[in-house]
Length: 286
Ligand code: KIV
Image (cartoon, rainbow, N blue to C red):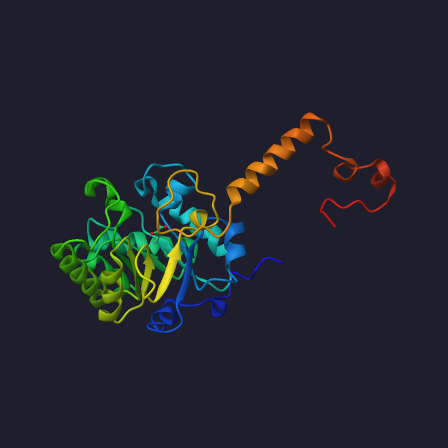
């Protein structure tokens, strides 16, 4: 049966995630579609409709391929497929950086059109005013510091953060700025382990690590990476818990062989004339 995705009472709220600082680790995964959200909802605390959707599902080279419309469509699907997880939708590049007013307008659109619990945006000191304005408008915000995929082109690639003194100091400034602006939690991505662990001890909001540290207050992975569906590069920090590429490829090979040999469809996969004579004949598998 489909979950009752419309009952806000069933949902884990952003404020209850905020209270998980230093407690049982917060389990987060990305999700982009209705069926995957349905599968994950029982197991996670938080589903992120990440702008990684542009790469993972739409085949763009970077997350810069995500648009507000794309994020809203996937946010709606994930909300329909989940009933208890806190759903956070990423604000795509270009939808918030210009001014706090632009950020609030985009965040309002995402929340109004999807019903999600919170939005996430990338950056620290440079977007603190945007975070504060969205929070003041009543919308919970998740921050994202360290490696920021929306900046990989301007950064010259996927570079691990926290390897120079200057960069470590910038990470602390960013973490404090996001905390002070009122974010309920912050993703720390692609950051030296000891730095991510120390940042976690220094701020009062939960840190959610990805390629960061086991000491973070929670962890997140891109769902397609962790189930072995990603076709292009998989980052070192990913642990693959399943190999769905092999499963799908073997299924496709078996199907192709059976169609070519006329083994599929078999007698169980066609409709007999019996139904027309009044016998029960279900469309669905029984
Ligand atoms: O877009 C995304 O999937 C993300 C996670 C990697 C945290 O931002």
